[in-house]
Image (tube, rainbow, N blue to C red; front, side, top):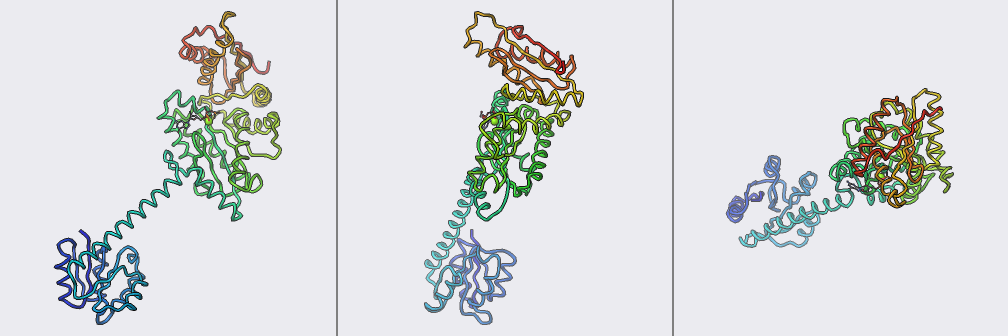
Length: 447
Ligand code: GH3
Ligand code: MG
């Protein structure tokens, strides 16, 4: 039942309207614009029938008052007139009046006009709501509720075209397939949502967060000061590590981050994306769980890239070593980078007197195993190792049947636990093979 208010100085008209509309609508009556205002202040109507010709404030003057009110855009007004006056009707339509009815009323016509206006308003409202929903959906990633890449692209290009500076931060989760394999995709989805929340918390209103797709996120920061952005990223790693203490599945992943600054590294979404992607690739290549700023000096030579990231990332690794010691995960890098990491760790170990071990894990399956089969088994070794190392340990494939690991801050007992109980039993679990096929050679790093 809709609420229809009729404002007319003629009691007879009020009674007639009540009789005609009263069966289908809740009708309230006012004899002047002032009385009508009192009714509206108590409860907003769905429609107003407003007489034009009234002593005191007439209908047209009433409209001028209503136009200033907040409810005016939501409440349709049908003007009631005694005679047909096209000039007056045009004037009223220009002021936002929805329709006209003429006295004396033809009941069915009045009923019909009121119903049509109400229906039109309802369908407009419905349409507006749907439009808002569609616009909202087109801007957001349904799983995380974050903005999506299409929104980001448009927004970033708009900001840049207005000469605004900023930073494009690209984040990919490390070893996410492993997290999915271990905990299942539902938990994987949850992890993606959790990380979206972490990013949003850290960024606050200093920028906006979006999901690029899969396990990849972006942040656009409204600031291109390198020190500012670096602090934000360090805070992000700190928050991630803090959350991972209580949310155990997060321990199986980490963040690789690439940063491009606008306008220096790019003046459009596409250019910044490409630069941040290269920087992120560096972070991945250099052991993951790290960040890298884009540099024009980037070449295709991985050694040039390695130098940039190893230092920053490993420094952080060593600095955060205590905080993240309990977390598991593995840093896989190719052998050349591993040597650099190893050299760096060796220097850090010398300086900080950390205990560290170099471990060679060799697979001994006998000469009768075909090379292709050895590779299949090595993938199981890889998985076993990846799942057992702690976050600040580093590992790499060394040869067709060997892995090389650096375990930091371990004593012999720790090592015993890590190797004997974890890697061997995980290997057995994954491959169903004899864990004695794995041979471990251990040495102190400074020997
Ligand atoms: P890397 O450390 O090199 O980043 O490897 P990764 O294991 O994280 O894998 P990669 O980034 O290459 O691929 C992303 C994986 O994330 C692929 C897919 O298994 C998983 N993934 C992508 N989207 C979703 C999703 O919406 N939900 C879940 N649960 N997993 C997803
Ligand atoms: Mg990933």
